[in-house]
Length: 148
Length: 148
DNA sequence: ACTCAAAGTTAGCTTTGGCTAAATTACTTA
DNA sequence: TAAGTAATTTAGCCAAAGCTAACTTTGAGT
Ligand SMILES: [Mn+2]
Ligand SMILES: [Mn+2]
Ligand SMILES: [Mn+2]
Ligand SMILES: [Mn+2]
Image (cartoon, rainbow over all chains, first blue to last red; front, side, top):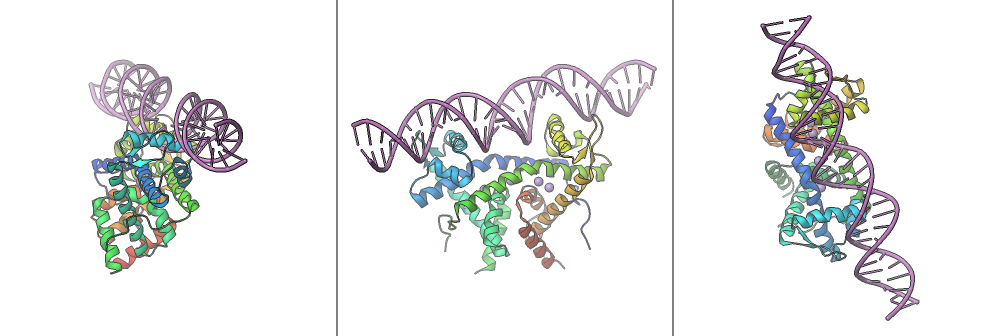
């Protein structure tokens, strides 16, 4: 009838450790992924990506963006001369492209499931960083089956 | 045929800010939620929750657990005398219970969708912190429809 | 009752990603 | 073209969550 009161799966300790480690790892890539995705969108939308706009979209202060851009630059995902606007490297473009695809896959799946578009967009922003390849494939299949 | 190359929804800037703020807020509650859930499981499973076991399950060092337990105590979710084992307060038990339910809802949904149990368990550990009430309701409905 | 190993805590370090205030640069416009 | 404003960066702060090394306490086994 109702659900059992405790987590059923006494999965092995090692398995559980792997899960939590994966979550921590995902959170380490999250900032970078969201930044390149937004930078690509801004370039497409307005022709250029400037720290001001990034700060405005994320809802953070400008110095936060400057600091985070240093990491993107260190990881060779962007080109950025001081006081100039931001370019994506080829690697950055590729990462942005795959993040964008994954983002859309998640949003479209949630909408196909019956969730309202604004909530789908909202939840996807967090969920996208935690879906494995297998899950992504199942999401895509479901979405395609729903609306052919 | 293929997907449009950029994010279609030129949702308002305010909307986008709210989404990213929600993700940041979720990440602030995440540690606390995973801890109370694990503590409840350990008490149920072994009769008591000790820092050692928590560290072992999360895959972190013991001092990390000690530090995080201070926050749970500050937030009145646990009772913990130094060197003794950990008890949940009533508030802690309630939070653990709702986190556990949400966790199970996500896992069962992913399994009902066709994802393998181990991957479902893996992805749920991250996803659970990013599902809104609406999404959770849809997940539950889907799971129930699938296997009556 | 003592000993001592295991568990737990404390101290102190690191990284990440927030912030504000102040300094600097670029750009617009008068 | 010079000034003034807006954008950007720098400096320096904070909190969270990880770590190791060193210290303290507990409690099991003799
Ligand atoms: Mn995101
Ligand atoms: Mn997350
Ligand atoms: Mn979790
Ligand atoms: Mn969980």
